[in-house]
Length: 364
Image 1 (cartoon, rainbow, N blue to C red):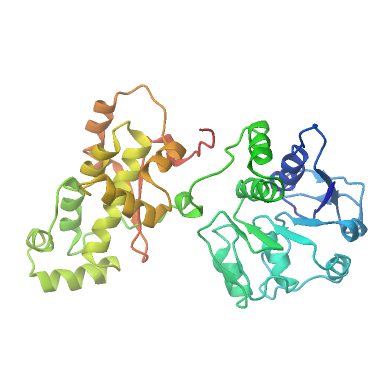
Image 2: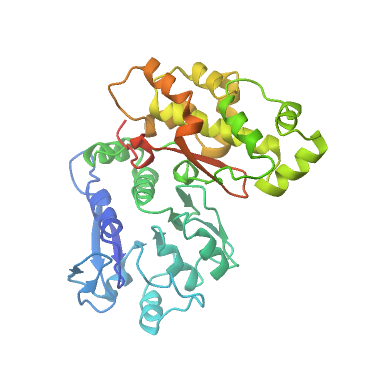
């Protein structure tokens, strides 16, 4: 039986702490025998406070790490706020007990601990998208990819935040014992055996509400006509400017070119329609101004990392309204949505009435 040891540090997040025991503990061979033995330890064997309103009591101290074949670091408060990225003496000693060749896994910000121990130098890793930039600043010798759900670098594996720890553990089970075992674990835990795309589909990229700027009127007009081709000349004419002047002022005010902004708005209109209507993909592409499903697929994949169908499976909101009534509502979306902007040029339209903006459906 493969030995997995989970190290709970002070401030550990209970949800992620429980993932390895739940997932690995559910893996069975054809005879129903467990494939993994999961042990949870703290540095000194004493209870540790968690990020919730209770402490965790365990039966093992750091000496359990010496027998581990896989060590898992769930997220905790350790190092996340420490720009120096230094390990405490007791943590350094604990890492010294881990045998060479032991597989290391970090869930969410557990990657900070591995990075501080020098175990991620020269590797590409991931972490929660909110902490990716921080991790990169603290440890420039590490390459951080903020868009993926997990990265398998052989003996070191890292995952994005929260539920991505489930994806990582399922991946490890699949790597160790094949898809059949991993799929059975997924069914047992009522989670999908594989999720399409990466963290990008869960990140909102805001854009500023139109202000009394010189190009604001043109932008507001464009939002009302996203379902048809819009030329730079039309935008400039609407703003009563020459194309050259309009292009310069648009970039000054918004931070991206008119073409980049318009594409971002079309993508976000498509996301809204995929989430809140039952329109066929071809109709979504038309309403968002992409013309064809192939064009929509290309642009949505570039932003969210998934196809339109995969995006809809994850974020679609069930409701009693018909597709036609929802389509009618969506045609006035520009006046009923809050928009903000980032320099990246990616837009985020947040429908006030769409519950899919606040919930992710993992069941398929």
